[in-house]
Length: 178
Image 1 (tube, rainbow, N blue to C red):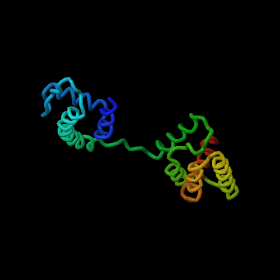
Image 2: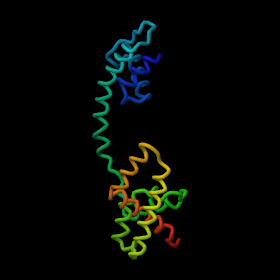
Image 3: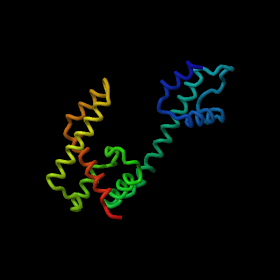
């Protein structure tokens, strides 16, 4: 059984369990171009025959589905929708890590453009210092490869910039009157 499981995982990693069910059901119903005689031996060869036949059908079905999916237009979110979602996420979840602020770059840009975010130089320095302190605490809790990778991130200006935006947004969301 281990050999069969390994065969399935390595040979058909893109198929779901549901697709396997469909494939074997179609094979038994005679809807696939393959034999269903396995002679009481459920082998990789038998599975391969069924899945090879099903793969041809699956590709055809997926080709038919793609045009339909491309016609479905995703909903258009307004800037207010984006900000509101991020604000709600932050306010309704435990506030133990400002790095959890969702979509910070986009939300920060929207609020900045709307003139809702205004910082004094001293506030900006405070945010930068808090981010540095938080990063130092995190780095001191990490070991080995994790510490090495996080240390590498700390040298990336975009990473630090995004963290500062996240902290600024967290502070902004917490200070908005309801």
